[in-house]
Image (cartoon, rainbow, N blue to C red):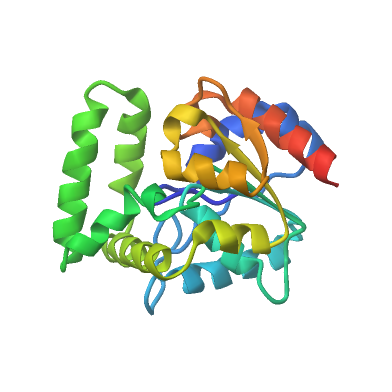
Amino acid sequence: MIAGFGDNASMFDGLGETALAAEFDLFPFDMPGFGGPPLVGGTTIDALAQAVAQEARRTGAQIILAHSVASIIASVANANPSPFEMILSVEGNITADDAYFSGTAANYYDPAEFRAAFLERLALKAQTSAIFARYHDNVAKADPRALWQLGRDARRFSDTQHPGEVLVAAGKVSYLYDVPNCPESTLEWLHAHAVDMRRLTGASHWPSVDAPHLLAAACLAAIHDLT
């Protein structure tokens, strides 16, 4: 299980008490710079994908649950040789419109400046949302340089490749989402390409936090239907 932009594996804590944990071993992974020690080199999608693939081989994980921009990382990690049999993408990046958080890093030339601006943006939302308050606090723990570098690379990836095409090319995929949380362009692409989809009605962009049992049930249904 790998977290989205700026977050860490604590976002999956709620899944530990669900039917998913009763049937499968769960391996939350703090990626470098986001709960884990930052990389010495650049924090790019490719570099994080290598770290994820290495961890999958160490644990023997066969399925990856990837949130938001981590869906791109999972897709790239599942290149040659493929460590995963299936990707469960939780509102993962499908079109460039999905990089509404990470992509803003491309507008800044300094990691500290981006971090401050991003946290300020999240703090405003946190005033009326416990979900955003949790996310703000975890982003504040992320390595500023890693946050900035990943954000810029996510924008580059979305501008030069199609995240949805890379995801479906990675093998068996199920997309877990709720309609209000997704850009129209993403929903149109998903329906046009007949991707396996599981709707999480009423959940936020962080269903493992506010709707863990709903997410667990959707994950189990996808796994059983696709295997």
